[in-house]
Length: 111
Image (tube, rainbow, N blue to C red; front, side, top):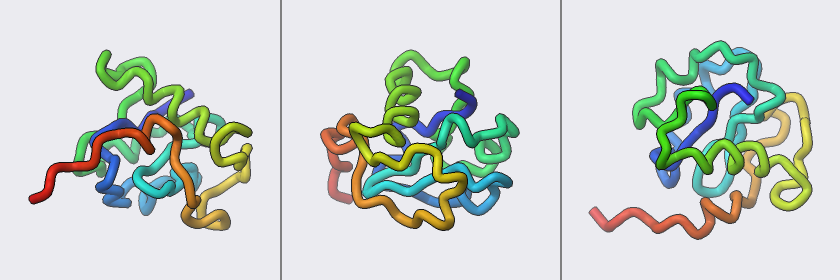
């Protein structure tokens, strides 16, 4: 794996990372974005533009966000989205599901 999107992205999905990704490896779920671990080229451009500071290299994940390495990986598998490795998010569009961890994540407090 390379980079991982973590909980600060849930219910925000700013999208700056999607626009700057040179390999189109950031996919949109219902509540958050996901980096495809096999498509990511480990360039780190997404980290520099993320306004919520939600993206980390997998080896630098904060302890409290460690489970999001599996969340990003498993999102593409047969038990969640069944996407596999489509080779780019632009042709896929928004996926009408999220990883179970994201689905059960508390909604933000009303502002």
